Length: 165
Image 1 (tube, helix red, strand yellow):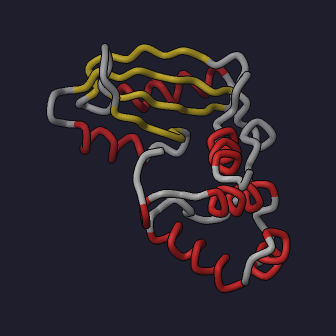
Image 2 (image 1 turned 120 degrees about the horizontal axis):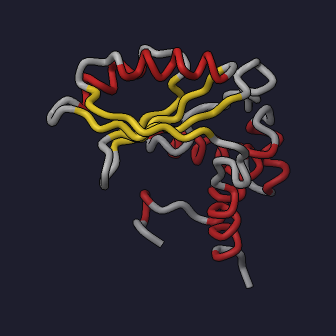
């Protein structure tokens, strides 16, 4: 496991994060009861993970398709050299752009975007390519999501590795 001491997550941290992943509305007292540790221990660990940026909040899980954005697409963007920050700022201003990752390989940025329909996706793509520093794009439409974004397997492995034998 990478890191040590203050930086390393342990089995209790993993079990706490799993519990909060399953039931994000649980209070500190209920978490402490279920984990069999003191309330102060749970609060201290949550505070430490928040300081480190591991625990960033408790937003509800939203279904974009149910909200009317049933189409997901990914675009690889080639941009003008040295313009990553400027392009990222402009992309962040496009509501349908959900994520932007700086990458290695053929493209410079990997963008996840959503749209209401194919025609709406064309509008979103047109908005993206209108960013002056964007030189070329290659877009693919997602047909399904066989593996959704997840961290649970990592937490479960950490919890199991740290369990008393």
